[in-house]
Image (tube, rainbow, N blue to C red; front, side, top):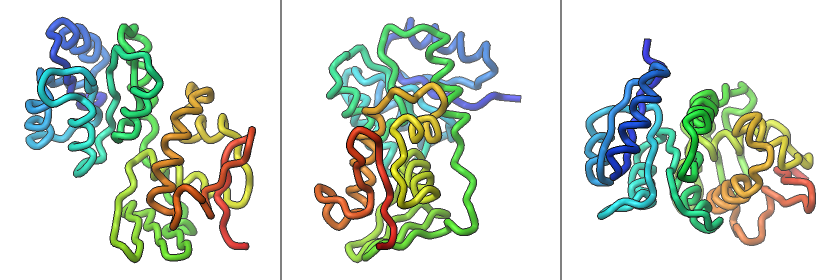
Length: 230
């Protein structure tokens, strides 16, 4: 039985070959693509559990591909990058990636990241948390839709997991590390930048004024709090 279906997108044949060998040995079904354009064709033709997507490719780069895929798909995405600037990592997460791995990376590190993401399936819904209603905003946790007077937007899988976790623990300050471990997994307790990016994305979707949040509040030196009611 397959451990899952993975698409590798990288313009370097040697990297595709090494990753294909390592992933196949772990029981994954693996396809690959050399360009962003070819990757989009693959995604339209087949369903994948996860995409390993290189940032730096000729033609359509990985950030563009990620944004395009995210406009219509909730597939798990890990970005592969040789860049070390924090801004580039933030850009990958902003584009909708679930995680990033910096080249050169070890095979055990990559496999650990893949297992962590595939293990974090959508959180089971509580009957009491089918919907969350804020002033002028309604979040449907079954469809992951955010409905406002201005229209409808959609939560990505990680945005959903984060908001659902916060809504399950309302009106209390939750430490960064507790949120990270609950939503991303036990190895992610120090990845505070992940959290900042996703909180910012959520605020854009649920707050009337994202730069002056009313519901998703920062607790200085601690973490965040979802304020519901008075």
